[in-house]
Amino acid sequence: MIKLKEFTFNPFQVNTYLLYNEQKECIIIDPACSDKEEENVLATYIQDQELKPVLLINTHCHIDHITGNQFIYNKWGLKPVIHRKGLPILESSSEQALFLGFPATKSPAPERFLQDNEKFHLGNDSIEVHYTPGHADGSICLVLHNERFIISGDVLFAGSVGRADLPTGDMALLQKSIKEKLLTLPEDFTVYPGHGPSTTINEEKAGNPYL
Image 1 (cartoon, rainbow, N blue to C red):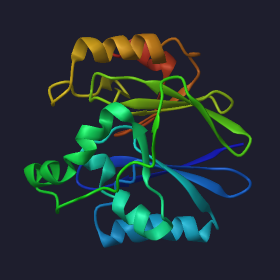
Image 2: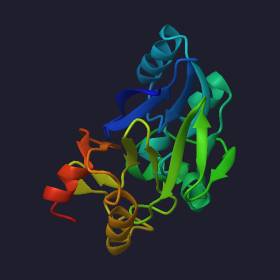
Image 3: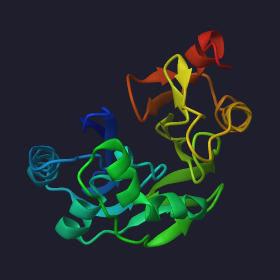
């Protein structure tokens, strides 16, 4: 069974997630730590729990979600795993950082690319990739059917959806992604977004004004 641990990092209040199992294998999702203090918080938890990071995933490559990629690589030797269409955004990380006032940030090149509907494993547990563009090229959501939850990145939030006014954003495409890839899941699934509190598919079907 996979456990989830959430951290909130950097001025944009990004949710960083750890997924880990009984064997202490660990996936790091959207490492948003942006200074030494935040890096220490993440590393201390991993060390205290005796976890072994085996995979680094970016749900998309906006700068606020990848600020810790280089730290993860330096600490555990992991390069990010992303959707191929997010590569141009990842490669422009230094320019994004300058525009938003972040320290100059460069991410390691991807280890490999994830595909839509791909399934991969953490031990015996399966994780499914859904390609969900609209907020940014390369946006993905991770669906864990056995645990009945979704990590939605900046695609779906509690009572809201991701911005579509940034480069490669498209509101109609974002709504299509959510309706076809997420709202078709069982209503009791918990949604863990890239910012803000968790929600459920049922809550968003019933009350999200953007859907």
